[in-house]
Length: 227
Figure 1 (cartoon, rainbow, N blue to C red):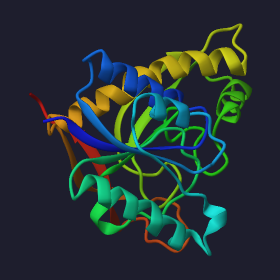
Figure 2: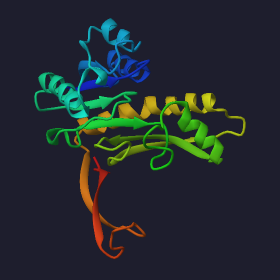
Figure 3: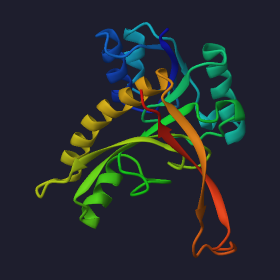
């Protein structure tokens, strides 16, 4: 059975178009049941309409707070997914309050190798500008489960992209996007095959104010199960 997904967009919809194209070529077995846009002017909605995929617009400015905004987004997801499948953030810029029943069911892709160049306000060209400013030799992209913080959930997979001597932010962005077009479908295939598991693992929180550096804390990480 095709993997049910809802796709969230905010802008051009290039990631959405890539998923639609792969589906139509028979290279990605997903059922895109709904596209939700955080902006009524997002040009990416055209790709959903051309593929006869339902579209809803949910703008944060129309709601009292993030909780109400998030509740509306996930109500629409519930109506389409009915307890199965995943929510796929595809260039989605709004931070959501993720309900408990969607823990490790919301995916995001970020145009860097997390934990580098990520977090609030790190999106678009700024990510690549900062990578070049710091002189990194390798950049890339990260597919991860989303939680209630920016770019902080368990990492599913990453793809590395070399930074060239003559790169500017736009040329680096273009090559990282090409890696994203490979990484997101790969992650969805892994999920469809039930090969991703999230486990708790202890670590020592060193030099963090208000914590005991010798007391193990628990974080979640994603592991890929062998075939």
